[in-house]
Length: 235
Length: 235
DNA sequence: CCGGTTTATTGATTTTGATCAAAAAGAAGT
DNA sequence: ACTTCTTTTTGATCAAAATCAATAAACCGG
Image 1 (cartoon, rainbow over the protein chains, first blue to last red):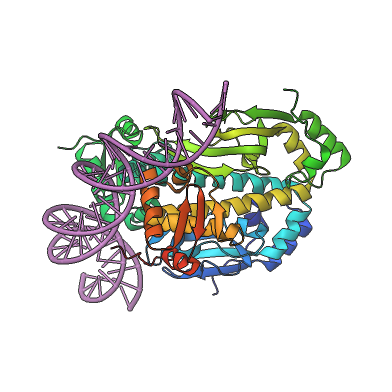
Image 2: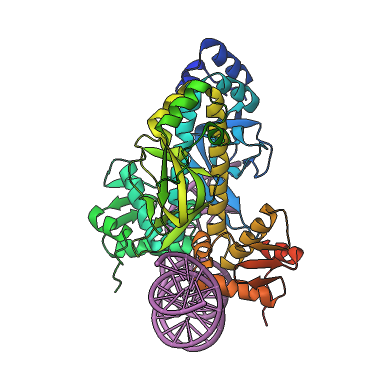
Protein backbone atom coordinates (compact mmCIF):
# COMPACT_ATOMS: atom_id res chain seq x y z
CA UNK A 1 0.00 0.00 0.00
CA UNK A 2 2.94 2.35 0.53
CA UNK A 3 4.06 2.53 -3.05
CA UNK A 4 0.73 3.61 -4.52
CA UNK A 5 1.08 7.03 -6.12
CA UNK A 6 -1.85 9.29 -5.54
CA UNK A 7 -3.05 10.82 -8.84
CA UNK A 8 -1.51 14.21 -9.59
CA UNK A 9 -2.95 17.17 -11.45
CA UNK A 10 -0.57 16.48 -14.31
CA UNK A 11 -1.71 12.91 -14.63
CA UNK A 12 -5.30 14.04 -14.58
CA UNK A 13 -4.73 16.48 -17.38
CA UNK A 14 -3.23 13.98 -19.77
CA UNK A 15 -6.44 12.04 -19.32
CA UNK A 16 -8.55 13.30 -22.26
CA UNK A 17 -11.73 13.19 -20.24
CA UNK A 18 -10.46 15.71 -17.73
CA UNK A 19 -7.94 17.86 -19.58
CA UNK A 20 -9.16 21.44 -19.56
CA UNK A 21 -10.56 21.47 -16.06
CA UNK A 22 -9.90 24.61 -14.08
CA UNK A 23 -8.12 24.68 -10.72
CA UNK A 24 -11.23 24.33 -8.54
CA UNK A 25 -12.71 21.46 -10.52
CA UNK A 26 -9.40 19.58 -10.70
CA UNK A 27 -9.08 19.93 -6.98
CA UNK A 28 -12.51 18.51 -6.25
CA UNK A 29 -12.15 15.62 -8.69
CA UNK A 30 -8.71 14.78 -7.32
CA UNK A 31 -9.70 14.65 -3.68
CA UNK A 32 -12.50 12.23 -4.50
CA UNK A 33 -10.35 10.02 -6.73
CA UNK A 34 -9.16 6.67 -5.37
CA UNK A 35 -6.30 4.42 -6.45
CA UNK A 36 -7.10 0.73 -6.65
CA UNK A 37 -4.92 -2.27 -7.45
CA UNK A 38 -6.31 -5.50 -8.86
CA UNK A 39 -4.46 -8.81 -8.90
CA UNK A 40 -4.29 -10.95 -12.03
CA UNK A 41 -7.61 -12.73 -12.50
CA UNK A 42 -9.48 -10.59 -9.95
CA UNK A 43 -12.63 -8.67 -10.83
CA UNK A 44 -12.73 -4.88 -10.60
CA UNK A 45 -16.50 -5.01 -11.04
CA UNK A 46 -19.24 -7.34 -12.24
CA UNK A 47 -21.90 -6.87 -14.87
CA UNK A 48 -24.85 -5.23 -13.12
CA UNK A 49 -22.92 -3.71 -10.20
CA UNK A 50 -23.82 -0.10 -9.36
CA UNK A 51 -21.38 2.11 -11.29
CA UNK A 52 -20.22 4.58 -8.67
CA UNK A 53 -16.87 5.20 -10.35
CA UNK A 54 -15.38 5.50 -13.79
CA UNK A 55 -11.86 4.31 -14.34
CA UNK A 56 -8.48 5.12 -15.75
CA UNK A 57 -6.01 2.28 -16.25
CA UNK A 58 -2.60 3.41 -15.04
CA UNK A 59 -0.60 0.18 -15.32
CA UNK A 60 -1.32 -3.46 -16.17
CA UNK A 61 -4.06 -4.78 -18.45
CA UNK A 62 -7.75 -5.56 -18.01
CA UNK A 63 -10.59 -7.09 -19.99
CA UNK A 64 -14.20 -5.92 -20.32
CA UNK A 65 -16.39 -8.91 -21.06
CA UNK A 66 -19.77 -10.62 -21.00
CA UNK A 67 -20.42 -14.22 -19.95
CA UNK A 68 -22.90 -16.67 -21.41
CA UNK A 69 -24.91 -18.98 -19.18
CA UNK A 70 -22.57 -21.76 -20.22
CA UNK A 71 -19.58 -19.74 -19.00
CA UNK A 72 -18.32 -18.72 -22.44
CA UNK A 73 -16.58 -15.36 -22.33
CA UNK A 74 -16.89 -12.68 -25.00
CA UNK A 75 -14.34 -9.91 -24.56
CA UNK A 76 -15.72 -6.52 -25.53
CA UNK A 77 -12.44 -4.64 -25.09
CA UNK A 78 -8.91 -5.07 -23.77
CA UNK A 79 -7.87 -2.10 -21.65
CA UNK A 80 -4.26 -0.93 -21.73
CA UNK A 81 -2.52 1.77 -19.67
CA UNK A 82 -3.76 5.28 -20.42
CA UNK A 83 -7.24 4.13 -21.36
CA UNK A 84 -10.33 5.24 -19.48
CA UNK A 85 -13.51 3.21 -19.40
CA UNK A 86 -17.11 3.07 -18.14
CA UNK A 87 -17.76 6.74 -19.01
CA UNK A 88 -21.08 5.91 -20.66
CA UNK A 89 -22.52 4.68 -17.35
CA UNK A 90 -22.53 8.29 -16.10
CA UNK A 91 -25.46 9.15 -18.31
CA UNK A 92 -27.55 6.03 -18.02
CA UNK A 93 -30.88 6.18 -16.18
CA UNK A 94 -29.86 3.36 -13.87
CA UNK A 95 -26.14 3.61 -13.40
CA UNK A 96 -24.79 0.05 -13.54
CA UNK A 97 -21.83 -1.49 -15.32
CA UNK A 98 -22.96 -3.18 -18.56
CA UNK A 99 -20.04 -5.67 -18.54
CA UNK A 100 -17.64 -7.50 -16.25
CA UNK A 101 -14.14 -6.16 -15.71
CA UNK A 102 -11.21 -8.31 -14.58
CA UNK A 103 -7.44 -7.88 -14.59
CA UNK A 104 -5.42 -9.86 -17.13
CA UNK A 105 -2.23 -8.60 -15.51
CA UNK A 106 -1.83 -7.06 -12.06
CA UNK A 107 -3.16 -3.56 -12.57
CA UNK A 108 -3.32 -0.17 -10.96
CA UNK A 109 -6.29 2.09 -11.59
CA UNK A 110 -7.61 5.49 -10.69
CA UNK A 111 -11.33 5.58 -9.93
CA UNK A 112 -13.18 8.88 -10.25
CA UNK A 113 -16.41 9.54 -8.42
CA UNK A 114 -19.38 9.42 -10.80
CA UNK A 115 -21.58 12.04 -9.10
CA UNK A 116 -18.61 14.31 -8.87
CA UNK A 117 -17.81 14.01 -12.56
CA UNK A 118 -21.40 14.61 -13.58
CA UNK A 119 -21.34 17.82 -11.58
CA UNK A 120 -18.17 18.86 -13.37
CA UNK A 121 -19.55 18.09 -16.80
CA UNK A 122 -22.75 19.93 -16.12
CA UNK A 123 -21.13 23.33 -16.42
CA UNK A 124 -18.49 22.49 -18.95
CA UNK A 125 -19.75 22.17 -22.53
CA UNK A 126 -16.15 21.84 -23.67
CA UNK A 127 -15.63 18.72 -21.56
CA UNK A 128 -18.97 17.32 -22.75
CA UNK A 129 -17.78 17.78 -26.29
CA UNK A 130 -14.62 15.83 -25.71
CA UNK A 131 -16.61 13.05 -24.11
CA UNK A 132 -19.10 13.03 -26.98
CA UNK A 133 -16.14 12.54 -29.28
CA UNK A 134 -14.82 9.64 -27.24
CA UNK A 135 -18.19 7.91 -27.06
CA UNK A 136 -18.84 8.45 -30.75
CA UNK A 137 -15.56 6.82 -31.64
CA UNK A 138 -16.33 3.87 -29.37
CA UNK A 139 -19.80 3.57 -30.90
CA UNK A 140 -18.19 3.33 -34.31
CA UNK A 141 -15.87 0.60 -33.03
CA UNK A 142 -18.87 -1.32 -31.73
CA UNK A 143 -20.58 -1.10 -35.11
CA UNK A 144 -17.43 -2.50 -36.66
CA UNK A 145 -17.45 -5.34 -34.15
CA UNK A 146 -21.08 -6.10 -34.97
CA UNK A 147 -20.36 -6.16 -38.68
CA UNK A 148 -17.36 -8.35 -38.08
CA UNK A 149 -19.36 -10.88 -36.07
CA UNK A 150 -22.33 -10.89 -38.42
CA UNK A 151 -20.69 -10.75 -41.84
CA UNK A 152 -17.24 -12.26 -41.50
CA UNK A 153 -16.28 -15.84 -40.81
CA UNK A 154 -13.66 -16.83 -38.26
CA UNK A 155 -10.68 -16.69 -40.64
CA UNK A 156 -11.68 -13.27 -41.94
CA UNK A 157 -12.01 -11.95 -38.43
CA UNK A 158 -8.53 -13.19 -37.58
CA UNK A 159 -7.03 -11.68 -40.74
CA UNK A 160 -8.77 -8.39 -40.03
CA UNK A 161 -7.56 -8.34 -36.48
CA UNK A 162 -3.95 -8.91 -37.51
CA UNK A 163 -4.15 -6.24 -40.18
CA UNK A 164 -5.64 -3.72 -37.74
CA UNK A 165 -2.93 -4.39 -35.18
CA UNK A 166 -0.22 -4.20 -37.83
CA UNK A 167 -1.51 -0.80 -38.98
CA UNK A 168 -2.18 0.55 -35.51
CA UNK A 169 1.51 0.08 -34.75
CA UNK A 170 2.49 1.86 -37.95
CA UNK A 171 3.33 -1.24 -39.91
CA UNK A 172 6.47 -2.68 -38.30
CA UNK A 173 7.21 -6.11 -39.75
CA UNK A 174 7.27 -7.67 -36.28
CA UNK A 175 5.07 -6.88 -33.31
CA UNK A 176 3.97 -8.49 -30.07
CA UNK A 177 0.35 -9.57 -29.66
CA UNK A 178 -1.38 -7.31 -27.12
CA UNK A 179 -2.49 -10.29 -25.08
CA UNK A 180 -2.55 -14.07 -24.88
CA UNK A 181 -4.08 -15.97 -27.77
CA UNK A 182 -6.80 -17.20 -25.46
CA UNK A 183 -7.90 -13.61 -24.85
CA UNK A 184 -7.59 -12.63 -28.47
CA UNK A 185 -9.80 -15.60 -29.29
CA UNK A 186 -12.30 -14.22 -26.76
CA UNK A 187 -12.14 -10.84 -28.43
CA UNK A 188 -12.75 -12.33 -31.89
CA UNK A 189 -15.46 -14.67 -30.63
CA UNK A 190 -13.75 -17.85 -31.80
CA UNK A 191 -12.47 -20.80 -29.82
CA UNK A 192 -8.72 -20.84 -29.09
CA UNK A 193 -8.42 -23.96 -31.26
CA UNK A 194 -9.88 -22.08 -34.22
CA UNK A 195 -7.56 -19.10 -33.75
CA UNK A 196 -4.61 -21.46 -33.55
CA UNK A 197 -5.59 -23.18 -36.79
CA UNK A 198 -6.14 -19.83 -38.51
CA UNK A 199 -2.70 -18.59 -37.56
CA UNK A 200 -1.11 -21.88 -38.57
CA UNK A 201 -2.77 -21.63 -41.96
CA UNK A 202 -1.50 -18.08 -42.50
CA UNK A 203 1.96 -19.23 -41.51
CA UNK A 204 1.81 -22.20 -43.90
CA UNK A 205 0.83 -19.74 -46.67
CA UNK A 206 3.90 -17.64 -45.93
CA UNK A 207 1.82 -14.60 -45.01
CA UNK A 208 3.35 -14.39 -41.55
CA UNK A 209 5.77 -15.97 -39.11
CA UNK A 210 5.00 -16.58 -35.50
CA UNK A 211 7.24 -16.98 -32.45
CA UNK A 212 5.03 -17.44 -29.41
CA UNK A 213 3.60 -13.95 -28.94
CA UNK A 214 5.58 -12.29 -31.73
CA UNK A 215 4.08 -11.99 -35.19
CA UNK A 216 6.07 -11.08 -38.29
CA UNK A 217 4.01 -9.98 -41.27
CA UNK A 218 5.86 -11.13 -44.38
CA UNK A 219 3.24 -10.28 -46.97
CA UNK A 220 0.93 -7.42 -45.95
CA UNK A 221 -0.69 -7.23 -49.40
CA UNK A 222 -1.62 -10.88 -49.27
CA UNK A 223 -2.97 -10.46 -45.73
CA UNK A 224 -5.01 -7.51 -46.91
CA UNK A 225 -6.51 -9.46 -49.78
CA UNK A 226 -7.31 -12.35 -47.45
CA UNK A 227 -9.00 -9.90 -45.05
CA UNK A 228 -11.05 -8.64 -47.97
CA UNK A 229 -12.34 -12.14 -48.56
CA UNK A 230 -9.86 -13.82 -50.87
CA UNK A 231 -10.16 -17.43 -49.80
CA UNK A 232 -6.83 -18.81 -48.67
CA UNK A 233 -6.24 -21.73 -51.00
CA UNK A 234 -5.26 -24.71 -48.85
CA UNK A 235 -3.10 -27.72 -49.93
CA UNK B 1 -43.78 18.24 -53.35
CA UNK B 2 -46.72 20.37 -52.27
CA UNK B 3 -47.83 18.22 -49.35
CA UNK B 4 -44.51 18.22 -47.53
CA UNK B 5 -44.90 19.92 -44.17
CA UNK B 6 -42.01 22.08 -43.19
CA UNK B 7 -40.81 21.22 -39.66
CA UNK B 8 -42.40 23.39 -36.98
CA UNK B 9 -41.01 24.56 -33.66
CA UNK B 10 -43.37 22.20 -31.86
CA UNK B 11 -42.19 19.21 -33.84
CA UNK B 12 -38.61 20.18 -33.16
CA UNK B 13 -39.19 20.34 -29.44
CA UNK B 14 -40.64 16.89 -29.12
CA UNK B 15 -37.38 15.70 -30.67
CA UNK B 16 -35.29 14.91 -27.58
CA UNK B 17 -32.11 16.11 -29.21
CA UNK B 18 -33.46 19.62 -29.61
CA UNK B 19 -35.98 20.10 -26.84
CA UNK B 20 -34.81 22.91 -24.62
CA UNK B 21 -33.44 25.17 -27.33
CA UNK B 22 -34.14 28.86 -26.91
CA UNK B 23 -35.95 30.96 -29.52
CA UNK B 24 -32.86 32.10 -31.43
CA UNK B 25 -31.34 28.65 -31.63
CA UNK B 26 -34.62 27.03 -32.70
CA UNK B 27 -34.95 29.60 -35.41
CA UNK B 28 -31.51 29.00 -36.83
CA UNK B 29 -31.82 25.22 -36.72
CA UNK B 30 -35.24 25.36 -38.34
CA UNK B 31 -34.27 27.54 -41.26
CA UNK B 32 -31.41 25.17 -42.09
CA UNK B 33 -33.53 22.01 -41.74
CA UNK B 34 -34.67 20.22 -44.91
CA UNK B 35 -37.49 17.77 -45.48
CA UNK B 36 -36.64 14.76 -47.64
CA UNK B 37 -38.78 11.89 -48.91
CA UNK B 38 -37.32 8.51 -49.82
CA UNK B 39 -39.11 5.87 -51.87
CA UNK B 40 -39.23 2.24 -50.75
CA UNK B 41 -35.87 0.63 -51.48
CA UNK B 42 -34.04 3.91 -52.11
CA UNK B 43 -30.93 4.92 -50.20
CA UNK B 44 -30.90 8.02 -48.00
CA UNK B 45 -27.11 7.70 -47.71
CA UNK B 46 -24.35 5.19 -48.21
CA UNK B 47 -21.69 3.95 -45.83
CA UNK B 48 -18.77 6.37 -46.17
CA UNK B 49 -20.74 9.35 -47.50
CA UNK B 50 -19.91 12.70 -45.89
CA UNK B 51 -22.37 13.20 -43.03
CA UNK B 52 -23.58 16.73 -43.56
CA UNK B 53 -26.94 16.12 -41.88
CA UNK B 54 -28.41 14.19 -39.02
CA UNK B 55 -31.91 12.86 -39.36
CA UNK B 56 -35.31 12.55 -37.76
CA UNK B 57 -37.72 9.98 -39.17
CA UNK B 58 -41.17 11.55 -39.44
CA UNK B 59 -43.10 8.81 -41.25
CA UNK B 60 -42.31 5.45 -42.88
CA UNK B 61 -39.53 3.06 -41.90
CA UNK B 62 -35.83 2.79 -42.68
CA UNK B 63 -32.95 0.41 -42.05
CA UNK B 64 -29.37 1.17 -41.05
CA UNK B 65 -27.12 -1.59 -42.32
CA UNK B 66 -23.71 -2.84 -43.39
CA UNK B 67 -23.02 -4.98 -46.47
CA UNK B 68 -20.49 -7.78 -46.84
CA UNK B 69 -18.47 -8.15 -50.03
CA UNK B 70 -20.75 -11.03 -50.94
CA UNK B 71 -23.77 -8.73 -50.67
CA UNK B 72 -25.02 -10.07 -47.35
CA UNK B 73 -26.81 -7.42 -45.35
CA UNK B 74 -26.55 -6.98 -41.59
CA UNK B 75 -29.15 -4.59 -40.21
CA UNK B 76 -27.82 -2.50 -37.33
CA UNK B 77 -31.15 -0.83 -36.53
CA UNK B 78 -34.67 -0.41 -37.88
CA UNK B 79 -35.77 3.22 -37.69
CA UNK B 80 -39.40 4.03 -36.92
CA UNK B 81 -41.20 7.40 -36.83
CA UNK B 82 -39.99 9.70 -34.06
CA UNK B 83 -36.49 8.25 -34.01
CA UNK B 84 -33.45 10.34 -34.77
CA UNK B 85 -30.22 8.85 -36.07
CA UNK B 86 -26.63 9.59 -37.11
CA UNK B 87 -26.03 11.94 -34.16
CA UNK B 88 -22.70 10.33 -33.34
CA UNK B 89 -21.25 11.44 -36.68
CA UNK B 90 -21.31 15.05 -35.41
CA UNK B 91 -18.38 14.41 -33.13
CA UNK B 92 -16.23 12.17 -35.28
CA UNK B 93 -12.92 13.49 -36.60
CA UNK B 94 -13.91 12.68 -40.17
CA UNK B 95 -17.64 13.13 -40.41
CA UNK B 96 -18.91 10.25 -42.55
CA UNK B 97 -21.84 7.87 -42.13
CA UNK B 98 -20.67 4.56 -40.65
CA UNK B 99 -23.54 2.57 -42.24
CA UNK B 100 -25.92 2.52 -45.19
CA UNK B 101 -29.44 3.86 -44.79
CA UNK B 102 -32.34 2.84 -47.05
CA UNK B 103 -36.11 3.10 -46.82
CA UNK B 104 -38.08 -0.06 -46.07
CA UNK B 105 -41.31 1.87 -46.60
CA UNK B 106 -41.75 5.21 -48.34
CA UNK B 107 -40.49 7.65 -45.73
CA UNK B 108 -40.38 11.32 -44.87
CA UNK B 109 -37.45 12.72 -42.93
CA UNK B 110 -36.20 15.97 -41.51
CA UNK B 111 -32.48 16.58 -42.02
CA UNK B 112 -30.68 18.99 -39.69
CA UNK B 113 -27.47 20.71 -40.68
CA UNK B 114 -24.50 19.19 -38.88
CA UNK B 115 -22.34 22.33 -38.57
CA UNK B 116 -25.34 24.19 -37.35
CA UNK B 117 -26.13 21.66 -34.65
CA UNK B 118 -22.54 21.54 -33.46
CA UNK B 119 -22.65 25.31 -33.04
CA UNK B 120 -25.83 24.97 -31.01
CA UNK B 121 -24.41 22.25 -28.77
CA UNK B 122 -21.23 24.18 -28.17
CA UNK B 123 -22.92 26.61 -25.83
CA UNK B 124 -25.54 24.34 -24.39
CA UNK B 125 -24.26 21.89 -21.78
CA UNK B 126 -27.86 20.87 -21.11
CA UNK B 127 -28.32 19.70 -24.71
CA UNK B 128 -24.96 17.94 -24.62
CA UNK B 129 -26.15 16.07 -21.56
CA UNK B 130 -29.27 14.83 -23.24
CA UNK B 131 -27.25 13.69 -26.22
CA UNK B 132 -24.74 11.93 -23.98
CA UNK B 133 -27.71 10.08 -22.49
CA UNK B 134 -28.98 9.05 -25.91
CA UNK B 135 -25.57 7.87 -27.11
CA UNK B 136 -24.92 5.99 -23.88
CA UNK B 137 -28.18 4.10 -24.22
CA UNK B 138 -27.37 3.21 -27.82
CA UNK B 139 -23.90 2.11 -26.79
CA UNK B 140 -25.47 -0.24 -24.29
CA UNK B 141 -27.75 -1.61 -27.00
CA UNK B 142 -24.73 -2.24 -29.21
CA UNK B 143 -23.00 -4.15 -26.42
CA UNK B 144 -26.12 -6.27 -26.09
CA UNK B 145 -26.07 -6.92 -29.81
CA UNK B 146 -22.43 -7.97 -29.64
CA UNK B 147 -23.14 -10.34 -26.77
CA UNK B 148 -26.10 -11.74 -28.63
CA UNK B 149 -24.07 -12.43 -31.78
CA UNK B 150 -21.09 -13.85 -29.92
CA UNK B 151 -22.71 -15.89 -27.17
CA UNK B 152 -26.15 -16.92 -28.38
CA UNK B 153 -27.08 -19.31 -31.15
CA UNK B 154 -29.69 -18.54 -33.79
CA UNK B 155 -32.66 -19.96 -31.85
CA UNK B 156 -31.72 -18.06 -28.70
CA UNK B 157 -31.41 -14.83 -30.65
CA UNK B 158 -34.86 -15.34 -32.13
CA UNK B 159 -36.40 -16.13 -28.73
CA UNK B 160 -34.72 -13.09 -27.22
CA UNK B 161 -35.94 -10.87 -29.98
CA UNK B 162 -39.53 -12.02 -29.58
CA UNK B 163 -39.39 -11.57 -25.83
CA UNK B 164 -37.96 -8.07 -26.16
CA UNK B 165 -40.67 -7.05 -28.62
CA UNK B 166 -43.36 -8.57 -26.45
CA UNK B 167 -42.14 -6.61 -23.43
CA UNK B 168 -41.50 -3.39 -25.31
CA UNK B 169 -45.18 -3.36 -26.26
CA UNK B 170 -46.19 -3.95 -22.63
CA UNK B 171 -46.99 -7.62 -23.02
CA UNK B 172 -50.08 -7.80 -25.22
CA UNK B 173 -50.74 -11.40 -26.22
CA UNK B 174 -50.78 -10.47 -29.91
CA UNK B 175 -48.59 -7.98 -31.72
CA UNK B 176 -47.46 -7.21 -35.23
CA UNK B 177 -43.82 -7.75 -36.19
CA UNK B 178 -42.15 -4.40 -36.75
CA UNK B 179 -40.99 -5.40 -40.18
CA UNK B 180 -40.85 -8.26 -42.71
CA UNK B 181 -39.26 -11.51 -41.60
CA UNK B 182 -36.53 -10.98 -44.15
CA UNK B 183 -35.51 -7.77 -42.37
CA UNK B 184 -35.82 -9.27 -38.92
CA UNK B 185 -33.56 -12.06 -40.11
CA UNK B 186 -31.10 -9.36 -41.21
CA UNK B 187 -31.32 -7.76 -37.78
CA UNK B 188 -30.68 -11.06 -36.00
CA UNK B 189 -27.92 -12.07 -38.42
CA UNK B 190 -29.55 -15.32 -39.49
CA UNK B 191 -30.76 -16.44 -42.88
CA UNK B 192 -34.51 -16.06 -43.52
CA UNK B 193 -34.77 -19.86 -43.75
CA UNK B 194 -33.34 -20.22 -40.26
CA UNK B 195 -35.71 -17.63 -38.81
CA UNK B 196 -38.62 -19.40 -40.46
CA UNK B 197 -37.60 -22.74 -38.98
CA UNK B 198 -37.12 -21.18 -35.56
CA UNK B 199 -40.58 -19.68 -35.56
CA UNK B 200 -42.11 -22.91 -36.83
CA UNK B 201 -40.45 -24.80 -34.00
CA UNK B 202 -41.79 -22.37 -31.38
CA UNK B 203 -45.22 -22.71 -32.91
CA UNK B 204 -45.00 -26.51 -32.90
CA UNK B 205 -44.07 -26.28 -29.19
CA UNK B 206 -47.19 -24.23 -28.49
CA UNK B 207 -45.17 -21.23 -27.30
CA UNK B 208 -46.71 -18.95 -29.90
CA UNK B 209 -49.10 -18.73 -32.83
CA UNK B 210 -48.34 -16.95 -36.03
CA UNK B 211 -50.57 -15.42 -38.68
CA UNK B 212 -48.35 -13.85 -41.32
CA UNK B 213 -46.98 -10.80 -39.52
CA UNK B 214 -48.99 -11.24 -36.33
CA UNK B 215 -47.49 -13.12 -33.40
CA UNK B 216 -49.50 -14.38 -30.43
CA UNK B 217 -47.47 -15.32 -27.39
CA UNK B 218 -49.28 -18.20 -25.69
CA UNK B 219 -46.68 -19.09 -23.11
CA UNK B 220 -44.44 -16.17 -22.09
CA UNK B 221 -42.82 -18.14 -19.24
CA UNK B 222 -41.79 -20.89 -21.61
CA UNK B 223 -40.46 -18.35 -24.11
CA UNK B 224 -38.49 -16.75 -21.32
CA UNK B 225 -36.95 -20.02 -20.26
CA UNK B 226 -36.08 -20.83 -23.87
CA UNK B 227 -34.46 -17.40 -24.22
CA UNK B 228 -32.43 -18.17 -21.10
CA UNK B 229 -31.05 -21.25 -22.80
CA UNK B 230 -33.52 -24.06 -22.06
CA UNK B 231 -33.11 -26.22 -25.12
CA UNK B 232 -36.43 -26.70 -26.90
CA UNK B 233 -36.89 -30.47 -26.92
CA UNK B 234 -37.76 -31.46 -30.50
CA UNK B 235 -39.81 -34.53 -31.59
C1' DC C 1 -58.79 -5.94 -57.44
C1' DC C 2 -55.43 -7.61 -60.60
C1' DG C 3 -50.74 -9.09 -62.00
C1' DG C 4 -46.10 -9.10 -61.24
C1' DT C 5 -42.65 -9.13 -57.81
C1' DT C 6 -41.02 -9.97 -53.43
C1' DT C 7 -41.17 -12.74 -49.31
C1' DA C 8 -41.87 -17.04 -46.75
C1' DT C 9 -41.73 -21.90 -46.15
C1' DT C 10 -39.97 -26.60 -46.46
C1' DG C 11 -36.69 -30.24 -47.69
C1' DA C 12 -31.95 -32.00 -48.90
C1' DT C 13 -27.14 -31.20 -48.65
C1' DT C 14 -22.83 -29.06 -47.39
C1' DT C 15 -19.81 -26.24 -44.78
C1' DT C 16 -17.98 -24.05 -40.85
C1' DG C 17 -16.48 -24.00 -36.58
C1' DA C 18 -17.42 -26.03 -31.93
C1' DT C 19 -16.37 -29.72 -28.98
C1' DC C 20 -13.69 -33.51 -27.04
C1' DA C 21 -9.25 -35.35 -26.01
C1' DA C 22 -4.46 -35.43 -25.18
C1' DA C 23 0.15 -33.86 -25.49
C1' DA C 24 3.52 -30.06 -25.67
C1' DA C 25 5.01 -25.52 -24.61
C1' DG C 26 5.14 -21.48 -21.89
C1' DA C 27 4.51 -18.42 -17.82
C1' DA C 28 4.18 -17.16 -12.86
C1' DG C 29 5.35 -17.49 -8.22
C1' DT C 30 8.17 -19.21 -4.76
C1' DA D 1 15.69 -22.80 -11.19
C1' DC D 2 11.82 -25.58 -10.07
C1' DT D 3 7.34 -26.89 -10.21
C1' DT D 4 2.73 -26.06 -10.90
C1' DC D 5 -0.75 -24.07 -13.49
C1' DT D 6 -2.21 -22.17 -17.74
C1' DT D 7 -2.03 -21.74 -22.53
C1' DT D 8 -1.36 -23.56 -27.13
C1' DT D 9 -1.39 -26.91 -30.59
C1' DT D 10 -3.05 -30.85 -33.26
C1' DG D 11 -6.25 -34.50 -34.51
C1' DA D 12 -10.93 -36.62 -34.73
C1' DT D 13 -15.73 -36.06 -34.44
C1' DC D 14 -20.10 -33.64 -34.21
C1' DA D 15 -23.66 -30.09 -34.52
C1' DA D 16 -25.51 -25.77 -36.10
C1' DA D 17 -26.73 -23.10 -39.55
C1' DA D 18 -25.77 -21.75 -44.41
C1' DT D 19 -26.72 -22.86 -48.98
C1' DC D 20 -29.31 -24.69 -52.87
C1' DA D 21 -33.74 -25.59 -54.83
C1' DA D 22 -38.53 -25.38 -55.54
C1' DT D 23 -43.16 -24.09 -54.28
C1' DA D 24 -46.52 -21.31 -51.93
C1' DA D 25 -48.11 -17.11 -50.00
C1' DA D 26 -48.31 -12.24 -49.44
C1' DC D 27 -47.73 -7.63 -50.83
C1' DC D 28 -47.69 -3.22 -53.65
C1' DG D 29 -48.58 -0.22 -57.07
C1' DG D 30 -51.30 0.98 -60.56
